[in-house]
Length: 144
Length: 144
DNA sequence: ATGAATGCAAAGTCTTTGCATGAAC
DNA sequence: GTTCATGCAAAGACTTTGCATTCAT
Image 1 (cartoon, protein in one colour):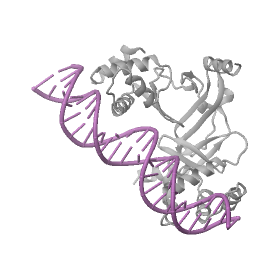
Image 2: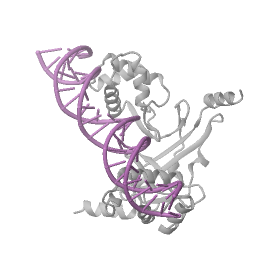
Image 3: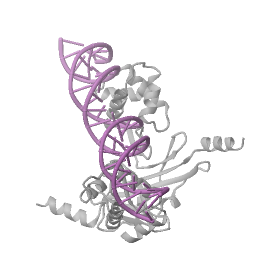
Image 4: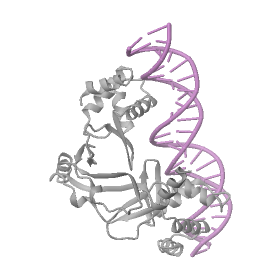
């Protein structure tokens, strides 16, 4: 999904396409992983001098509600990424360094035994670590 | 693990056993599930009129660091429960109503394919829903 | 021209910190 | 008697809201 796809998606939901939202769309289109509100604010701040945090929050929340972005709560706070385009259920491998995610097709629920009287509503399965690029960089740094 | 076990654990780590900490120990010994800082504050507040939030936070953080409690970040905030006494790796079934947890022995990592160059650090697997008691109560309420 | 998006300021929630008093050892 | 725990007050981080102005449509 590229910048224009995101913009079309926003427009189709009735949102007005401001310059700022165009930049926001570009940012998420170009980012493979998760971004915190602060990450977004810092990036956007380079282009808009008077940028305020509340606008960033408003747009992130709006895009989350419209299904353009998805929001995940990590130990160190809330983060956002493009909503996964894959329609089939899947989970993620997440790089702790660069934030990039990789889909995992295996869903653990198939193999999980749950008591008969327990009504399942949802589940969460995430794997964290370092991707090839980041693990390599770290090792190299450690060898200095 | 009962109240006295927890108190012994605190004492062995050099903590002073105040009346308030005794109550805190009892609360967690008697609670099968997760408690938010506010839950703890509300409960403790019944016994200590001048109770302040900062003391609750301080004690929760302290007990988390000592390994007496464990802290988990949920969508609706941070919560605490007694640290699992089971030594073997396991996951949890969590009731959205009463917060009670049940251990799951199955670990999804065995069956998950991860790229060779990805270095795994940790993973998270949690199942949410309603336990037998709560699911029953909800259905009964719905039938009124 | 109309209504939505933005910036500003302010408030709200949750959590932490500094300091004096009081309690545990 | 020392040292740690508590309460109070204040500050800090993060997020949301109200309102006037500006901009997309």
